[in-house]
Length: 341
Ligand code: ATP
Image 1 (tube, helix red, strand yellow):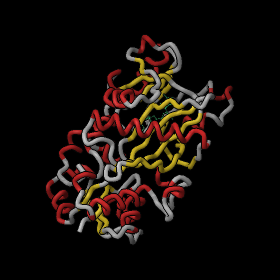
Image 2: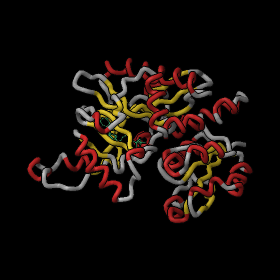
Image 3: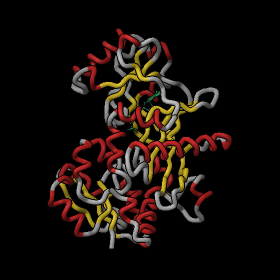
Image 4: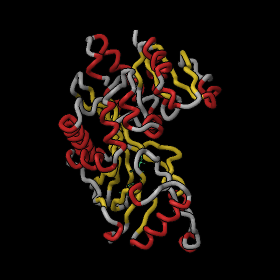
């Protein structure tokens, strides 16, 4: 009998609760410092204790997972704490497509896949000398917005970059990716694609609360000018959104073209949960600056389902539960190899 495993962080509670609701045995790879938190939840059947998540790369840890026939559900913590080579070397079946996670971590590959998907991507700026309007400088990988900054000239960019270097957050220019900044309503569109039914489900939409760029808006302009700190986009929390219904058609077509482009560029394609992240401008055009090729923490809002899953399912359906449901369906059809890599 298959079990479902994940790392103890990010959306582990949602994933394992969903797995338990679908009748699976649940396993958590848990760092010792978080043990008391996760022991509170009776839907977690077994904790595999580690000093640090990198131990998932050891034979010992992987053998424990294999003994339990585990399918490992990847999330943002796996991506932020491990290199793509390390993730690809994991020998336990990973839900979805582990090869596409490299495309999420590398900004250049990411842009390629987004352009292939015909998403409206904000222009990247290759050289700081070419900064003509407001840009955002981002670090590679899922840094969660920490140490990102805005600049509207080369001088401002150089000053802020030097500050990050002195703080040890980056080495040099090569650690930063520059992109034109678009202002509007930020929206993080959550999807699930099943390679079994070949259907795309729109699961929900959230917005992120990022510190301290959000805090800045509460300070009058006069005081803002005296602040010397570079504000960050460090994600602290998420809250739900519903979109104007007239925007939904475009939401589905963006998701579908992303799925199609992924099939062309990175076999077996974008299977399972993913998220397209961007901003609606004043004409309701969507500029998408980012995707996540796995479950995002914004789905934690919808543990009991979202307004959109209520339209698709007659029962509470979280993304974690949907993942487990897919494993169950695949097993019953003897198609497990289609949904894991
Ligand atoms: P994740 O945690 O999803 O991996 P990340 O570290 O890859 O995030 P982004 O999501 O690309 O980084 O950017 C972090 C935040 O910066 C966004 O949530 C958004 O608030 C802001 N942002 C990024 N790019 C743009 C843009 N082009 N225009 C406006 N805001 C942007």
